Image 1 (cartoon, protein in one colour):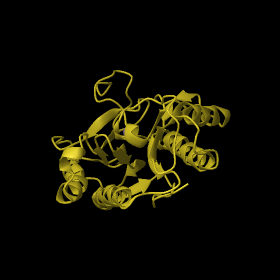
Image 2 (cartoon, helix red, strand yellow):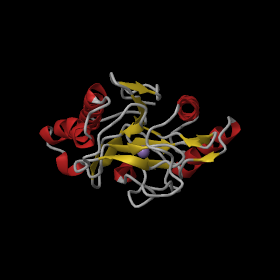
Image 3 (spheres, helix red, strand yellow):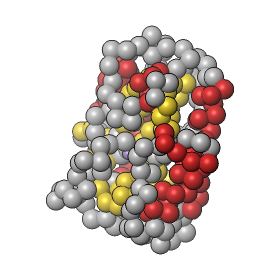
Image 4 (cartoon, helix red, strand yellow):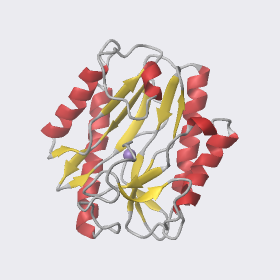
Length: 243
Ligand SMILES: [Mn+2]
């Protein structure tokens, strides 16, 4: 998740259609994200602060080949997980809370970007329900995205599930964005975007539900668009993890 205010029109953005070498670099960045997520699951303990966990994510990324961060790591827990762009604070992560991690490394000049939301210790039935809706929405978009699909239709595939579940107002951002040398490039996947997805575009797929004063859930993968579907470069598990 990154602010929409940044650089879709940035002259440093890469071409919307990525070549093989660009795709290879993005794939490496995504693979490092998977490794980092797996590592951090073994690191997180209740009582650690959001800042402590974010710092460990960043340390791991740098130690394992990141040239820089694609963006400032988002690490938000409990009620703060309802902030799509929340910065990590000294708040400690406690049992019964959601923790959302959104991070990415830059490798060979290209960005990774992934998000997972996990539960600490336990999850209420509402937490499980919201998680399942977001996951179902994300999988619905993944299932239908391929070259030739309009961005607003991709967004709609996920959004319809969230709207029909009664949480449309709690999905305040678009489905995703292009990724390249910048973490936020064309195309834009949202309810208004008439852009058409093309082969070898690299996009995020990241629906979320944020319930004010309660919690939020977002699940984000990074994928290559093909003529037949997508190649998902993020392979971290998406069933609800309860640490
Ligand atoms: Mn993103």
